[in-house]
Every structure is written in structure tokens, then in C-alpha cells.
Length: 249
Image: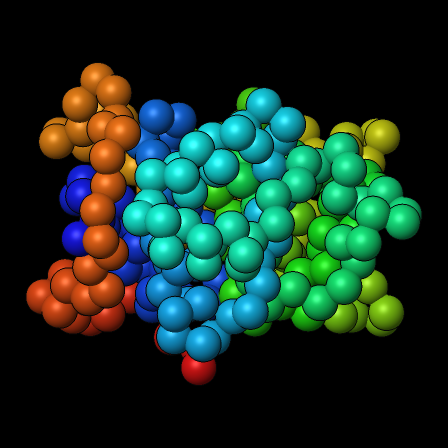
């Protein structure tokens, strides 16, 4: 069985409950391992045949290192399943990533906070075809700029409005601005309104944890993991009872 710390077990169970979900876990809490466990489960259950992980260049190696911790047969499943690519390359023409993926994971998802950038536009469109979508970051909102969450949640739950990708949670970016932002003379947000409501909505689709809250977390995560334990019934029932999000088929 996999040795997961309690907060990682919670993260994995939330991902089991929701096909689209955010892990807002502080750096050092170990986001990659529960994510790999979830992808492994989905593959073994026949629910996905491929998965794309988009990550900064600096953290690409972490995914390959964590895959190498699995037993050889399980590692082969993951390596055949997963494509790891960095944000700088994924959107460029001719790279072959513009196709349907069963699952897409954005590691350090704040890299798409600028909704108009080429990589953000590309990934928002790409998300429309995926059945499973997960975003991972410890800093979803940088410098208190609440508008940074819009593109990340549009990726998580995308829809199309007037031919453009919008958020099924917040609607279009204009609608988000009207409800939560006060704009300056340059049409940029400089103050925010209805913040409590916004925070409540964000919390419905994410699991947050800091290193300080992980009481069983050592100074350094262990290098050894074992066979994956697919279910933890008590914890699963507890999460399902309190979850505000429906489990998707």
C-alpha cells in the first residue's frame, strides 16, 4: 500500500469524489504523489487512456522521480499513460499536444492566471475535451489579485459562451469583474467586493493545506512508497457527506 500522510489521503479522496478539483497545497506538502495515485487508479479502472501533466520546467523532474518510486509494473502503467510537458512548450504549434486528453493536470496552475496569454488560451480550449481536470498550486492568488483565480477555475470547469471559453463556475471574465471587482481608470481591478461570497465559491472546489497543518509531515518526504490502497471507506464516507460537489460519472 502507498504510504500517504493524512493530508495526502484527504487530497486523494477529494480527487476521487470530483472529476474536476483543485489541490491548493503549500510547497513541500507533496502534491504530486496523490495526483499520480489518482491517475494510476483511473487507468486501472479503465476510465482514462492518456493524461497530460503541464508543469514548469523546473518541476518536470519531480514527476518523473515520483513515478520511479512505484513498483516496476505500476511505474510502466504510469509512464505509458502520462505525458509531462512544460508551460513554455505545450501551446506551440506542431508539438502534437493539441488533441483530446482524457485527463489534464496543471501543476503550479497559477501559470495560467493571465487569461489572455497564449498558453492560457491554449489550455483553456484544451480543457474542454477532458473528462478529468486537476489544478495544483500553493499560490492560486498572487499579491491579493483575486482575478487570478478566474482562468484557473475556467480550466477546472470550462464552458463556451459566444464562441469563447468561459468558467462554468463564474461565467465570463466580464461577469466575474462585474460581480467581484472595482476597476480603475485603466479598466484594471484595484478593489474587490463580495469577497466572502467569492471565497465560499472557491472553497467548494478545492482542498487547502499548509505545511504547518500537516502535523505528521517530516522535514523531508520519504523516498519509498508501496502498493496503492484504492479505498479508505471511513474517510471516503466522511468526505462524501461533507462535500458540496457532486461526483461525476
